[in-house]
Image (cartoon, rainbow, N blue to C red; front, top):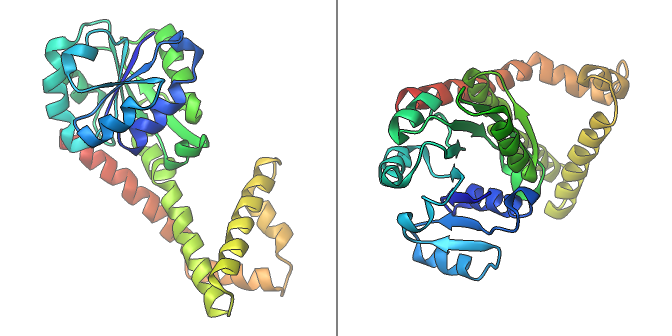
Length: 268
């Protein structure tokens, strides 16, 4: 199997790095196409990448074409690769909001997989939701799932609505966590902690809480009840969060991202 990644930005290279270790490639190098000479010079130094500047040198030989560019570049990318593609090739896109139907129309290809990754993929802890067009066989979808899972976990969903929803939950989700962390770090600083100590307090608290949750079958609400005692400090904090309807604000934020993903799809 030969894989071409178009776009050598953070997400494109993250998947290229992950996929390069997959046995599905049968020792074939990952082909990477980019228009930045500076980036291509860097890629030329990596032994398991084949850096390309010319479409006709790499697009025809690819079994899977991985599109990792900004959504507003979608139309020009598909227009440029179209003369060199064939009907058996599979398009895998991580472009937010660009629908399968839109990609089929722009590319002229039927086999399209739409995926939604998130930032922790960069450290092998990512979550990629994906859905495939009806023309993608079960074996092909399984191969794509294996490749996507090289950066963490993958989740196959039943329709594109769940891809937009995944944008609101997992795609944009790390930013919500960072927002919460930043707020706690600011509180720590106001309480007199140094930046270093405040960062340690918050980072370890988040890491520990997530690990604790992942190793049990207990719900978040049950964990909150275990931590909080009546009239205690944690209950005071939770009461403040609930009185200020922070839970509603968090859900509103997730829906804002979800709705924007839908809007992006309507623009193509």
